[in-house]
Length: 192
Image (cartoon, rainbow, N blue to C red; front, side, top):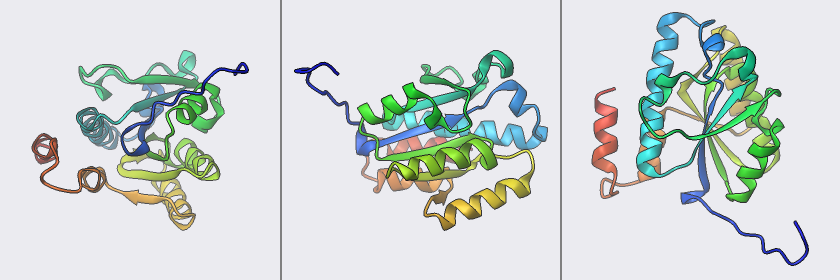
């Protein structure tokens, strides 16, 4: 920043951002088809809810030139979120991701996507090292080998990461049935 330039911030609602990690064709194809479909459905619910709640949605793509771009059904007709390409396993290896998080004064990340045991795990640890709160949306993450995902979740929980289902997180954000988006979110959750 040049001397005399004013630092401007664009703080988000409650300092929260949601991150969808690496839901790309070649990665998702390595999962059991039924599990992959469940994952996409849960992430799609979360994406719709984040839009309703006006919570920023950040999407990472691991080497998209090799693994393809994020599956379009993740967004299902919604306006596209912010994309960040990376070649590191942690999202924090992307300078543009780090810059966006800092400029928008993000305090809490909601993590979803793949793989729990690699990119989710390393991103969560890096976020915590930057004093950010982390919640992993347990029904919105997966690993090719479920035991690897289970081990990573256990380690992250022990490190202080919150592990909660998307429904629990959505109702926690709203905190009351008087929230202006309560009916719309409830409808999304019921048809799940």
